[in-house]
Image (cartoon, rainbow, N blue to C red; front, side, top):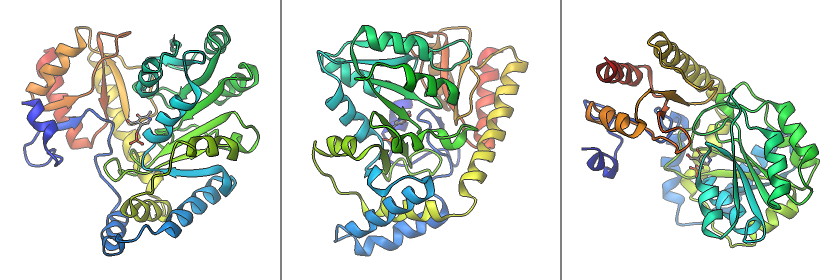
Length: 344
Ligand code: PLP
């Protein structure tokens, strides 16, 4: 059954096991050069190797064209996301999020007694920045979360809308832009904004396109004052295997372009296949999509699992839609077989 599968420490997509399309992971894992770098550094992992973290931070800053003092590394992007909720939301400082979106921040803010304003996405899947700015003023938001491309939809929010938001939001509302899936999209990063303003925090992760979800590496970019606030909640050195694999990934020529192209091709073929059968998706530029299955999404996901294809879940606002991660072409063929078997 499904629970046995998710408890397994090994990815089981190979050799007749279930296809795992539920956590927006990269089916290819770390690039071969990254795997080799991680293996090689294990012998040296009796040390913290702080200089390695500095090397990665500096290379990231250079590649992005921002200051080294505007970058801080974390073991995954979940950590700075959690710290942002702890620092900048409270009973007197609310949070504004899209609906649907990645729920970690909203859940933590809710647990802290903060008011959470959920603003439905626009019809085209973009964040409704005008409604979100109004909500921020209404609830005295300390933080506004903008996930671009968005999870679960993979939909994008145009740069013009983000610029409008930054120009029109309340002064006290910090904006956290989560770019976990940016490398899959055609969008430009807003990371350069951290050199212009002190109220924007941009997050990146190595868990998605770089295939390092289990290795744990993420980046927070912001004005040094904001990074100091994030760091004030305590230090936590990074796994050196992740640092070595991360450096190798940043240095691998063509890695981003190749994986982006591969994902786009498989995703577009899958979305077209679904459309031809009358099932529509929200426009997506990421490694996931939300499809309207025209029946209860939870029951549908359970039926797919029975056919050996584990997909993502539904969000309360859309009970008849499910999130699906884009796997390899072979995995999506199995997705198609199971989908066709269930929908007839
Ligand atoms: N942000 C978004 C939008 C995500 O989808 C995820 C994971 O699925 C994360 C952040 C956290 O990922 P990690 O902590 O592995 O970087």
